[in-house]
Structures are given as C-alpha cells and as structure tokens.
Amino acid sequence: MQRILRPTVWQQVLPEDVFASLALWMEGQDFQLDHRAWMHGGSGSHVAHVRLRYDTKVQDQIFKLIPPPDGATESRRVARAIERTPPAFREAHLVKTAQWSPLSESRWWIHQQEVGGGDLNEWRPLTSFIDDPAFGEHCAVIVKSVLVEWNDRHSPPPETTTASGFLQKRLADHLKERGGLRRFAQETEFDLDAPPSVVQIPGRSAALPNPFALLRGVLGARQHIEITLGRAHGDLHADNILIPETDEGSEPARYKLLDLSRFEDDAPLARDPMKLVLSVAALWLPSLVVESSLRSCLAELVVSPNGYPRSAPVAGYAEVSQKIHRASEALARQQSATHDWKLQKLLVLIMTALRFVARQDFGMADRIWFFEVAALATREFLDPDHGRDRGRTSPTRRQPVPDRGGLTLVRPETTADLPASPDSQPEATIIPLPLKTSQPVDEVPRLLVELLHGIKELPLSSSDARLAFIAAGLCKTARRLGEALALISGTGPVQRELRGVTQHLQTLTSASNRRRTVPELRAAGDELRRYADQRWALPDD
Image 1 (cartoon, rainbow, N blue to C red):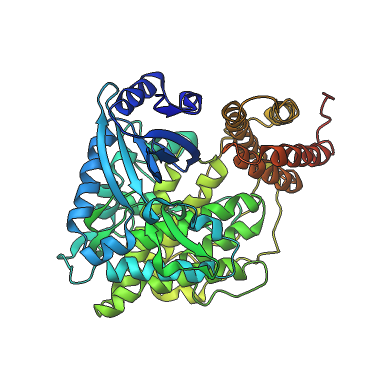
Image 2: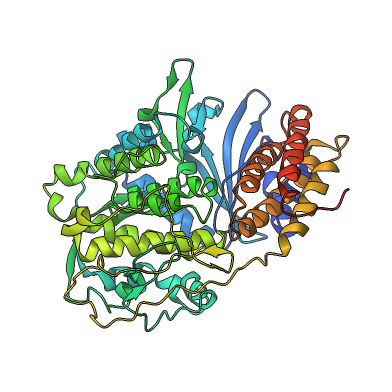
C-alpha cells in the first residue's frame, strides 16, 4: 500500500533527504498521508494541513517538519508547555500535539498536531478575519485570555533590569557576526557598535531617538525597570491562532493556539500582545505604499493608540491596535501593576520590532518601518509623560523632497519632539538613515515579464501537485517584485494589482478550485500588465 499519497507534493518542497526520512517514518504508521495544503511556517520549517486515512476513519492534522538544530529544542518546549499549563486552559486553548519524534535519517523532527477532534473544516486562522469588523474584538478576547487565564495562580518573581541589559539578552543571536541586526546595520551602513543618539527616519520631519543607542546603553543607561514574567506562547502571530466558525458565526472565545515551540513559563508577559500587534501590522503594510504618510501614522498608532485621532484613513488600524493594548492591561490591573506596565510594553515592543528588523524575509522598506516603530517606542520609553503633547503625522499630507534610492525622503525640520532624557546627548548629530536598494529598479520589468509569462503559460493539463508547485514558484517571483516596487515612488496602482495576482496564486498553491482560479488569475494578470504598461513598455508575449 502506498503510504504517502501524491508524494510529488512533498518532493517539490522538502529536501531530498528529508522526504526520504519522511517516507521511512511513514512505513511504521497505520495510515495513508494525504496532503491538503501548505500553511505558514518559519525558521526553515514546513507546515502542512494533512489528512490521515485509516482503514476505518479519516482524521485531519497539522504536520510540522522542523530542521536541526531547532527540532530537539522545540520538542522540549512543547513538552514543557503541556506539562506546565493548567489542565483547563490546556484542554480549552492549546492545539494537542499528538506526537513528536525525530526523522532519524535527516535529523529533522516531525510534530503532529490535532484540532477540533480531527476535523479542521470549521477552524480558520485569525489572519482570515482581518477584514472582519470584529477583528479587533477577536484579538482583545484572545490577548486577555492568554495573559490572565494562562497565568492564573502563576506569578514568578519579576526581572529587574536596565533597558540595555534586557535588549542585549533577548537579541543576542541577532547581534552576532552573522545575525540579522548585524546584517541590517551592514546593509544600511549603520554603526551598530557605536550608535549615535538620534536618527532621521526617511519620511519623518523630525529626528527620533535611536533604538540601537538604547540597546548599547548610550540612552537610558541609568533607568531600571521591573519586567513581569509568566507563561507566554512566544510567537503569537495571527497564523498561530485558530478560531472556530459555525453557521452561527465565529467564536473567538474558543480559540486554539498552534505551535508551542517557543513557549516559556518565565517570559516577559508583554511579549505575546506586542508580537500580535506587530504581526497584524505586517499584514497591513503591503497595502500601504512606501511614500504614503499612512505608514508613519501606522507606526505611531501601533506604539501609542490611545488618544490617536480617528480620522477616516486610520480609524480601523487605530481601533485594532487600541483593543490589543487595552486587553494587555487586564493582567496589570489584576496584579495592581499598572504603574509600570506601559514601560514594560514599550521595552518589549522595541525588542519585538527589532526582531522584525532582523528578518531577511521582509523587504528593506518594511524592515525600515519596523525600525521606525522601535524608534518611536524608544522615544515614548525615555519620555513617557509627554507622549500626548507630540504632533501626529497627518495621514494625507506630506512634504516631498528629492527622491533618493527610490524612497521619498522628508527634510528634517526640527528636533523639538526628542525626549529630554538625562542620558541623552545634547550635541548629538542628527543623521539620515542611509538606504541601499536591495532590488535594483531596472529589475522590475524583468520580474514583471517573468511573472506574467508564467501566469500565461500555466499548464491546465498538469496534475494538481504540479500546478501547485508552479504557483508556489510564481509566488516567490511576485514577492521579489513587490519588494522592488515598494522602493519606487508612484507605483501604488501596480502594487495594488500585484496583490490581487498574489492572492490568486496563493489560492492555487493548495491545488483547489483550479478551473475557476486559473481564469481569475489570468484576468488579474491582464490588469497588472495594463497598469504596468503605463510606466514600463513591456514586450508582448
């Protein structure tokens, strides 16, 4: 009996030795493995929705294949999460990891996760609710539960530290020679070891405190803070949260948490809500062109949504951010610790934003946006009592200046809103954050032609697995194209059409409804060509 149904789906994604190890592992199982769809993965892992076909039943599971050396570490953390979580919360909100074991021939590990009694049809990731008017309330329900219910009768001693000590401890891997922050500093020609006190972010009219200066102790060196610790998921992004949806509607109170591989029972409790708010913002970024002042507004309201003007362009973003921030205060109110919770949140937000800066899977424009968030949070951390007095960025007005590297910069006007911290350097030099375009502008026509030709040549006669494999390759081309377009002024309409193309490609990667999806994809490709032709004279196919 063939144990792995449609093996080419796995072979096209997994390294050869990993697939061989999976096939060997399957020889000892009493079910057939049927791949349904690829899901969000990270750090080199592969996550799939699968269907296990036994002789007498069918069961849905989520398989996670984890590369070395992370596999063993993640497996220990999953075991710790199960052991150290109160039974009621574990049963209600943790996806059951039915089994974890090594794939011995490759040194990878496999985790089998069960949801909803083996039927995934009624469960949707939180990501899919992002356009729902109730999205912010869903986030609030989950954040409050994670902080309060998961930490019921669990209160380890707080950690007393400085901002520099906290950041250096938790960003140590990214500060190593080949770490993500070190690479970011090299790509932007930024001095990470002797950082200036302030930095001029492209698109902002005033300088901000440099978060790297906070990390190195140049700023805030004498300020100590107590960090509240407890149980935390560790990677609470919207794809790691499942919500049931029935004919009566969605039920966020019955949420389930996926992927416990970064669980800690003595983590900073502000980590999960701050990771969630930034991961949600990351979903919004592609719809905001780089030169748009809406990006600066989004950075501001992610850091401090309370009191932010609810103008039409930002009202929805502000509501979601505010609901997550307010829900995160539930535990602080319960423990009568609201006096320093804001500082804890800000410090953890700086750390989390810098982790996004370190990620190589984001384009440079987005990484600079996360750096902007870290800088704004640094300003609030150093001077928390004067946040309401600072001006807000208008979502519709800008001061254009000559183009540089594909990004519209704003000439600095004043440093009046820099914090008057006792540790700040009054003679600090305001410097512009230098930019290097990671994708040359002349690459855009080539990538457009490559993508559009690939869409036109999609072979409808191919197998579902082959079609999904081609679509996955075209998704990568679309992502590179999006990164390049984000660095070029005036490409908003092209970016908009590209997002439509990408959505159809992502649908196609699951190899479902292909007869309907391919014509819709080709129509979206025609619209993309129409707008692209207005700027680049693309050759005919």
